[in-house]
Length: 391
Image 1 (cartoon, helix red, strand yellow):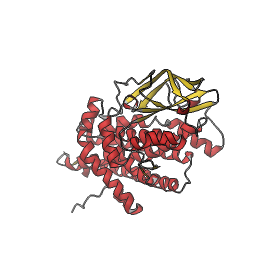
Image 2 (tube, one colour):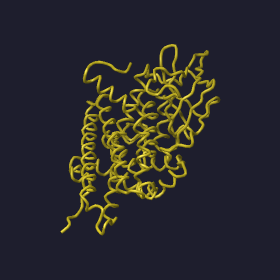
Image 3 (tube, one colour):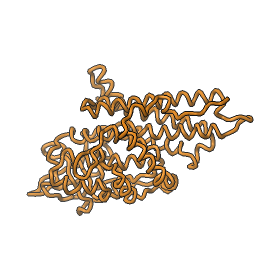
Image 4 (cartoon, helix red, strand yellow):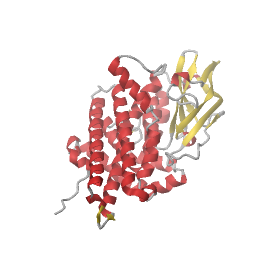
């Protein structure tokens, strides 16, 4: 007699490792995603567009924007709870988790951690509610993995700063109300809070993407953008500022990528149970079960790693090298799972009726943003050997 199937993460008894509060938030975001986001995501992806303002307001009401920050209208949850929310959002689509990551862990975190009290009061409550959208301007057309080489400059002119430069691959850029822009100054790299209505600021949309299509991606162009002296983030000096923000965003990716992988695996299992091949379910063949078992193992191991890193972060013991471990492993394995699931669905796997190739396409971007796999490998290699191989 066939036994009742279990979900992949039930094999690892994951729920028993979570508190009631953590499970409740995970289930709340999962339910919201199923009700409000999943019915539309294939159409958004196919259209290459996202109604970002409507989505942001809904996520603001849900309480997930900047949810791990304290005060200023933010929910003040644990880091692990935030990670679980990221997992559920990315189970719908990486573009949705990207919106939340950039809003909360990059733009809002930069203002919360490095900004003045005026910056915080002006922007954070509106951003937490989804009434204002933020973006984070660090990457440039010629400087991704080497942000120290950025060409964007900010020069003093009397009581003002004048900013010139170009940023690239900026999530939320074209719909943002505020941009946190990093620029070289006479005193090194500094961050600036830039209202996007400032003269000289523009954000052309990047089109013809094959990945993260349900996400707004933009170029930022700053031509003689004049800002008041107090636009500079007072507590950020040098690359430690933007890199600290990136560690926050990467932490969410550690969990988020697993959401995409889980959604692919669940879709593949359901399909294999329903699809008949040679007069029996595809799921009853040994090779199919081997694929499913291997993917469940990697998903479960990635989840245990994410939970461990989440507990370390909440205890104040997580360092950047460990975030690199999580990002490198979990995104790499999630992409492998998505690709393998596509083989189980065969030709059906290339359609938007199923989520697997959409997730795989998205994960190709997740693999290289917030630090490429190569960079994270070198971070880990430096930790193991004490030798830097970056140059």
